[in-house]
Length: 405
Image (tube, rainbow, N blue to C red; front, side, top):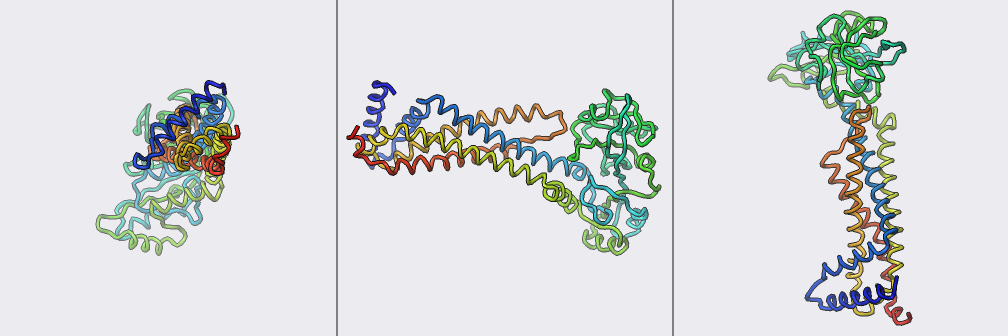
């Protein structure tokens, strides 16, 4: 710092001390902000390091939590599209994407149960997709009645739902064009040796397992997967108006001892718990977010501490001229808040750019208003916590030190 800058800071310190000496006037916020601004922007390199630390923390937390929210949506997407009240599933089924097959009499047993208004079979199974130019990839075949309320493809951008009723017709998502080895609607391929034609395209239907969903009719899916004409992976139940859900569930359970009867919410929660926690995927995403917070706190704390240490003489001058400890603490906290706001805005901007870049990939990264607000509160809290180390250093300043310079 030059002699001129030292004189200017000393003059500013005396002015602040004079204003803060009058208790009735309260803390002069404008002077606090002015001194905090000068301290923060005096050392541009230190400021850049601080902002990079906050930006890195915000981006890492935003992407990790955005992936977590996106993963939840992917796992539950197929279930959320259904309007079923109850799901009949094979015993031990862990999630929608971990299918097995029922015995084959569940739909008829359900339709003869009092309180059941509708029962629809749904077939889900693993298949091998042979690409038009050679090579194979694993897929998840989803076969349904294509009736409203069943699990049918949505977000259709080319073709139609009725187009799936054509011979050998299937629907795929544009996101998986490269995996499936196709480039446009109308492509011809094979599923387990059966010729198929892509007649319908969707956009944004992605699976957590990264296996492409391939939609078709119920009968065709059974043929592709070589299962019985009455077999299904799940049977979706809608109860009659006025019927009691738990009563219907108990009646179904008594008739179908080899199957489980779950509500939509229960099957959704089971699927989420399995993929996010039993497989460790969700824990890894949360751990990454926590790591981002820790890194941000450490970097900001070190920078604020170094900045405070570089300005100890100025803070000692303030103390010697009668400035209160809370006033000086306010200056340090204001530095932290300014850093937090600037770092948050930069970090959020970069996060949104990353999310936009991932929009058409198999990864789903989501930014919601609640997440954006939570990130702001988190950034403020992180920087406030980081400022504590600097405040502790200032509280040990001896005001007499100013006279020994």
